Image (spheres, rainbow, N blue to C red):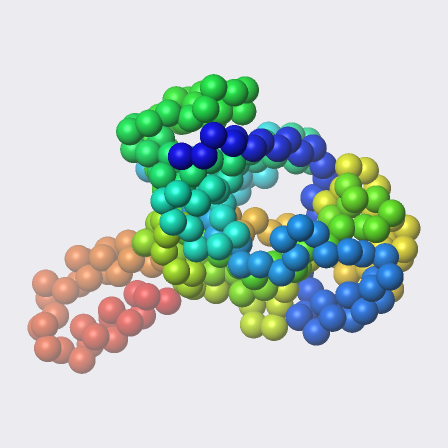
Length: 266
């Protein structure tokens, strides 16, 4: 286990934009002299989102309250037990995003959630412990990965610009030791642009977004995955209700039974 425990605290505004993939290259070409790749550059980000058994955190987030929070485990590569990963708490308060994270070995992070070991003795770890105690049934809920190109503004490193593509999610194989892959979140041909800053964005960037009519979009990757899960559960309930009501009167081999089941799925 590493003796070096890294931690970071962020406070910033985050604005998302859903754009055509081809526009990504256009924007990068026009911003070429004003942005620099960040420390991770191009990477595939892997996340495990934690939630309660009844997805309380996702449900709260979908209501768009003034205050919401989430907990996730993040790695920039397929991790082994000894590899260090980020355990992050992310809160949004009146439009401002606060992110607090620690860097610990994957084995320690997973062991904490299985009550096999503890986190370091620092302030952020205490907040994560309290978070888990408050929500009680916290467990891994969704694996979410995407390909990210990340940059910062040359004259103001506090301004970050990221492009996410191939955003995928699943509810099985919930470990950072696993390979990426899952169901797509974004529409074909779309990418997610995020601009992160402590205040207003640089004027050249604002003008460029206006030039190409790029407007803010309300999109949570985890929230989108939860929405699909909810919709599919509702469809399953409709199937069960429909078949329970009518199947006793319909022969198992009747063509009508098959069409009834198909119509219940829509």
